[in-house]
Image (cartoon, rainbow, N blue to C red; front, side):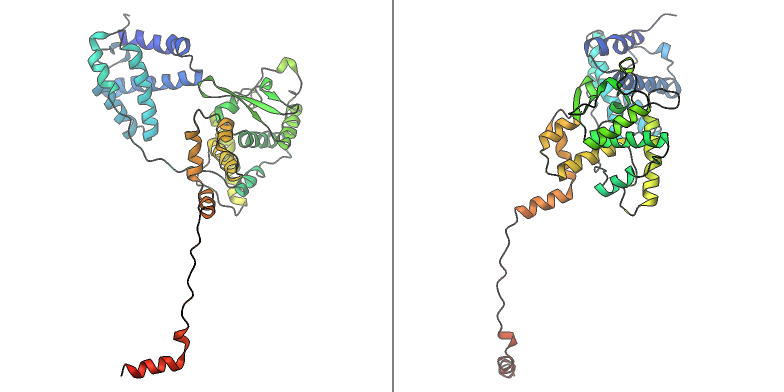
Length: 340
């Protein structure tokens, strides 16, 4: 079978360009691959262009717009997810436009497809009492319950993204003082996060129970595994969190958000740090944000912080004393007679 120019460029883009020249992480490459996997499905099932017949001449702005509309209408993608897929396509177009100058005009039209504006959703987070209720939900009399409690505690205490927790290996854990864990974040960024003493004690107990503590031959093993001793997946951690979230809501009178996700625990940690008057710069570094502008969303979302800030800047108005003449009954009687 003769390969098309589109298949060659896409293979080069996903296979060598992203990892070799852009040095992006495997998770990012997977996101790009998913974008084009869905795109090929759309071309074949909706447009009628099979993958082996797709060429760069057919790769047009109208085809991309149809794909984006299909993602929203048929696949029920949110606008943010739709924009993420479009960003992947834009990256591919920038890579390939110097390779096929004869289609440069159409490629520039694809680059001209704008991201859709979407309303920013409010940040969902747990209050301190709700977070405490969630951490009380696992049954710590069982080995699985103790593992699940360690997962919830570490997600919250470290502010880790779910993929960072999945990728955590034994060698990334330091239990000597000062205790830390090393998280491998987005864009291959690495940050070291301090652990509270209570979390450290829990983590040492967990590693000992899993036969991972101070075992040099097991340094590269995952900290958290499933029943098959494989790294937990996003779905697995989401299942664990959903289970204890439902238990906490059923057994507590605290206020909880409608839904939960691992990122809600990250938001909760950031909000609680902000409410404790911790500087935004430190919160930025703790969470691994590139810019403090990203971190400022927590300050904008916290009503209590806003109220305290307004009260500290509030200038109290002096209320003048009202005249007591209305309480003088003889004077009021004289005025009434005057008006007759």
